[in-house]
Image (cartoon, rainbow, N blue to C red):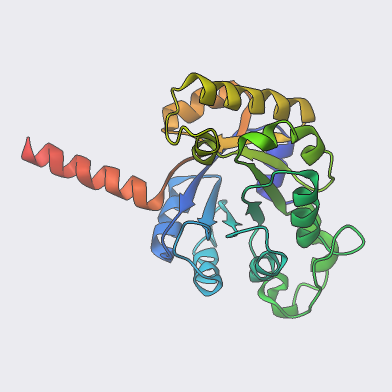
Length: 250
């Protein structure tokens, strides 16, 4: 079983970071810093499949898992990312059981899904890993994003589709779906997030979301969040750089 998937199954809170750039160096630095995983963001980030492969290579020699958020619930893009060798897939804006079935089917080979099979791609070490097709399901982490108010009531049916590991609350898009973009202190937004938290925990899936800071992530882990993302390569660099400039100017 993959290290990240094993940690999640053991109930160990895992901390990750978004990677918005296409930089292997930034990815490697995050891995060496000790994050459990990095999530290459191809929904809002700048990467391609080609740059993702270079970033995955930069993780070699660390215990950091390389995951990728696809731009949309697209079986072709999911297949290409998996063939490139990612250890996990995040699918945005999953709002129904049908959305979940489509995403999960794209991640798994028949009879459990519809992922196209090939030999020689990077994920199976260009053909050197003959057991890849039978073993990949035990390593792969599948995260589905709950990002709009309508999806909250459907969390039980979304979770009932076999094959996902994490249900991940996307607070920013969730706030937008309520007409309250970025108003995270608004009572309606807070209530919607609380409802999603409770519903996800009842399903037995790993509860995931973003955190405003490592301190917030630690507090969320105490509330049974198991898959947390605190920051990104771009934001962490910006914070450190601006802090250094402020310190000098003062």
